[in-house]
Length: 202
Image (cartoon, rainbow, N blue to C red):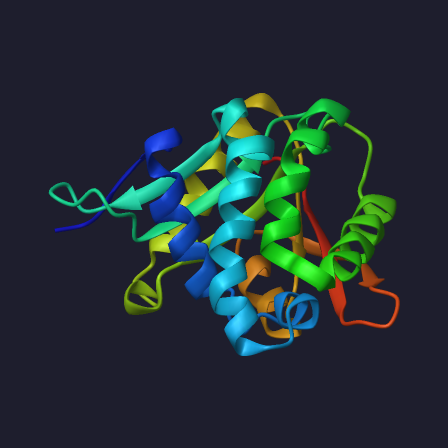
C-alpha cells in the first residue's frame, strides 16, 4: 500500500521532527553546526520541532507522507508560499529559546548558516522548499519525489518558480530530475558549501 500525502498539523510536529532528525543526522551542514554525534542526536529533533512550530506550520504548506493506518510520518516536505520564506521578527523571537536548547554552545554556527542562506536567497515571488526528508527505512521508495512533485504541481498552476538549497553535491543531480538548476554556490564562513537551485514553472 502506497503512503498517502496530507498537510501536516501541530499534532505531527514530534513525528516529523524525528523523521527530519534521522534524515539529516549525517548532513554536512547539520554535522558542522553540531559536530558531536550525541549533540546531534539530542539537538536535531529539538531544532526541527522548533522550526516547524514557529517558522513553517502556520503557513499550511508542510506536507507529510504516512501509511493510512499509521500516524507516524514516513517523510515530509516543508514549503513556504511566496513572500514568507523569511520568518517575521516576532516568530524569530519566539523561536529563540527552542533554538538555543537545540544548538547549545554551537548557536553561533547556526546563525552563520542562516545569515549565509539569507544573503543568497532570491527576493522575487517563489515557493521555497526549506526541508525535505524521508525516514531511513523508507528512503529509496519514491516518497521524497512524490512529496516534491505534489507541491511543484501547485507552482506550475500558479506560474511560480521554486527555490531550494542542496546541502550535498550529490543531491544536485537528484533535484535536477525535478528541473531545478544550480544558480550559485553558497559558502558558509568557516563551514561547508550548499548549492542554491531554482526551478522555473512549466
